[in-house]
Length: 472
Ligand code: ADQ
Image 1 (cartoon, rainbow, N blue to C red):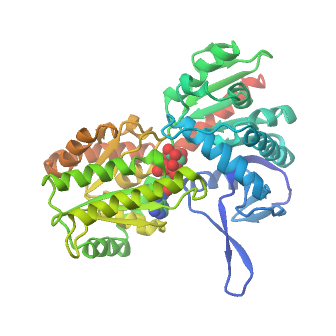
Image 2 (image 1 turned 60 degrees about the vertical axis):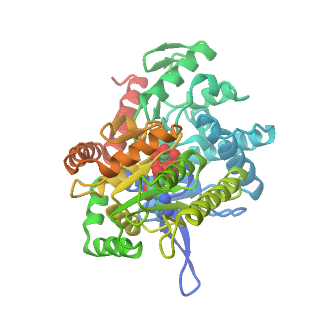
Image 3 (image 1 turned 120 degrees about the vertical axis):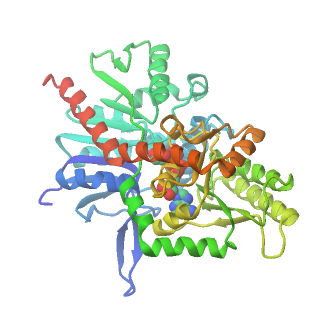
């Protein structure tokens, strides 16, 4: 990589690598297999790309290093900053506020101060690494001030921002004591991407109402004449790769083994989530429990497998949720199970992609019931793995994915009776109906994959950036 400057940069809270210790005791890094990394890898390679982010350990300064053709630029975070910037402001203020306040957001001035300080550090690192005229793509709610900070330091850059979580209705956003600073932070970008058109519209409306700036459809004209554009780019997955994974003989064999281990039920319901209060896990488990209790589902024939990845375990709301789900599952299994036949199998663990694909391939009904979700990739992963056009997707209308996945069995997860009815329909619907729905869903997921997401954002960024420079 001859130079320590890059012409394409991603700035995200986390670097896309995890530290691994090798048998000889030396330390190495392994790329974490997220969709974002896969999608951006070709762009990274073609442009001598760099990724700026925290490497995952507190109180540690690391020099930039190269891994898999990408220059990784670690940003240090102290123990206190992790508590205040990450667990605090990002995950206990912004996360609940942006997800319809399904948990009460906490507002603390010290958390905000840490958020500003850490955002500045990310912006400084990015400014130091970016080549003249480089493209910088800032990711997500942890770094909403970075676009403006970067713009001030480096007006030559093309700056894009993508928000992976919902942008809230203006009435909720207004609760934030630092609402003006956040909007101004985002407006530092040339292109601000959201998961759904409603998010972009909410943002533009806020700019007009609060900052009295001139707006026209998806464009905002700042007082200095610069234009920032706000548009929707629904994120997706590498559908082809998921499909191929699910078809692999070893994954198929594992899929059969999972069903056998669950007692070869006639029907397997599946839930897969990060353990988060936005995901509606309690609602779906309660609905399933009631269906069993009322005799509408026979637990001898039908079982529910729920897997939840441990997440944000030091944030209070997440500890509480974990206990509540443990209790709920325990109560249902205690009341309704028989020896060797618990209606619900619950695993609090993270699994490799192969295992996820095997579970998706095994499941007859996938239940995705968030109370609010920016997109929800699990719904798309399930569909990508249903090679035989069988299976059914129950999907909350409050996910970004619901906007594209119209043929899912859509539900309002707050309406437990409605949810029960839809779960039952997904179980009993005619095979021909399920196949028709699944075919349509698969078409959408394969056409609009992660590569299309990345290239449409980056093409638009290029275009709005060139328009700014007066080149078009
Ligand atoms: P998340 O809230 O994390 O993402 P989601 O989009 O569903 O939600 O992605 C979860 C990912 O984690 C999926 O790829 C899934 O396979 C994986 N996963 C879940 N449980 C797992 C387990 N037990 N073991 C291993 N892997 C597991 C945020 C937003 C979403 C948005 C994405 C991408 O909240 O709305 O879709 O970013 O923008």
